[in-house]
View 1 (tube, rainbow, N blue to C red):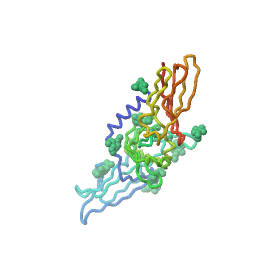
View 2: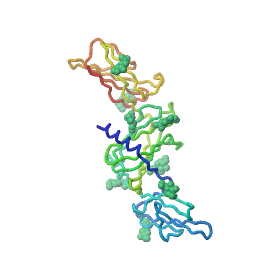
View 3: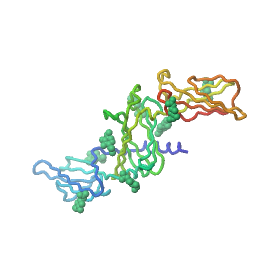
View 4: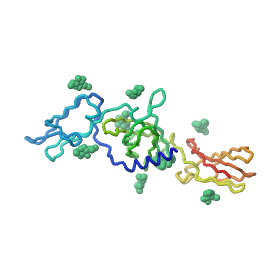
Length: 288
Ligand SMILES: *[C@@H]1O[C@H](CO)[C@@H](O)[C@H](O)[C@H]1NC(C)=O
Ligand SMILES: *[C@@H]1O[C@H](CO)[C@@H](O)[C@H](O)[C@H]1NC(C)=O
Ligand SMILES: *[C@@H]1O[C@H](CO)[C@@H](O)[C@H](O)[C@H]1NC(C)=O
Ligand SMILES: *[C@@H]1O[C@H](CO)[C@@H](O)[C@H](O)[C@H]1NC(C)=O
Ligand SMILES: *[C@@H]1O[C@H](CO)[C@@H](O)[C@H](O)[C@H]1NC(C)=O
Ligand SMILES: *[C@@H]1O[C@H](CO)[C@@H](O)[C@H](O)[C@H]1NC(C)=O
Ligand SMILES: *[C@@H]1O[C@H](CO)[C@@H](O)[C@H](O)[C@H]1NC(C)=O
Ligand SMILES: *[C@@H]1O[C@H](CO)[C@@H](O)[C@H](O)[C@H]1NC(C)=O
């Protein structure tokens, strides 16, 4: 059922046209903002909010007691010439965007990487419709590894995918920061959440590509998304076989097949990276 939501979500993402504003001015509710703008000597200047001229503003912009209707794109013009622009947002509690959990009421954001080759998925429960700008950065150098911008609906589990992240395959212990910037649908409310983790703490392989039983031979393959060669990126498999009478046998294996002494009715297999003791994949199942 979740899959249906994610499919709908992908459609939303592709229709997204909103560009997350750059040059944000982030202020708390009720803040006062004053900005001056100067043209060439003798030149008339005026301020606009979201394209609408602010009458009699002259060169001085004053916003008192910031509230959502005063947020948005402010620009200063000398006739047709743009002199200056910035985007005012009001800091909202993160609980407007993310469902918080636990005693600390921190946003509950879960990330996992199906391999070391540059894909990271993250998921959380969204509270209100919003646009998110997501960056993954190296914690120490602040180098950007990948980013994406998505428009997400509110009040449901959402999932995003970061692609082409430049992880270094041999530095999976690398500390990274996920920076999630949220802008409310009306364009006025803002929050930013950082999540620091080690890449190898979030590795979770996809399920094995298949599981076949032919007579007494059980065979399987690594998930298609896993890194090759498997000599560098080994996987360990947990195989559970069940006979027609319901008796079970469990195996922990490095190989990709097993010859058994009897026929089986049902089987399940999952995998993990044994070098870092990663999370286990979900199960791949076979049933006679
Ligand atoms: C804000 O307005 C300026 C001037 O019209 C424009 O160049 C800029 O793209 C706008 N920014 C956003 C985020 O809409
Ligand atoms: C903003 O200005 C008003 C008066 O215009 C004042 O009452 C208020 O305390 C100021 N707010 C802040 C955050 O300084
Ligand atoms: C956010 O709002 C919730 C609920 O209103 C509150 O419990 C929490 O302390 C707030 N968090 C911050 C960081 O202000
Ligand atoms: C990551 O997310 C994308 C779409 O958001 C989904 O298609 C893909 O299956 C997800 N990957 C994993 C490993 O769940
Ligand atoms: C990843 O990068 C490759 C080449 O650099 C590009 O062709 C591909 O479209 C990118 N994939 C995504 C999902 O951005
Ligand atoms: C999140 O991290 C970025 C860069 O690493 C930093 O500029 C920003 O201040 C941090 N934000 C918060 C809310 O801690
Ligand atoms: C395993 O089964 C899949 C699909 O049922 C099939 O495509 C594949 O060829 C089989 N592989 C082996 C090694 O039998
Ligand atoms: C691997 O992780 C699991 C669960 O976190 C733990 O119970 C187990 O002892 C670990 N195994 C090794 C070999 O570190």
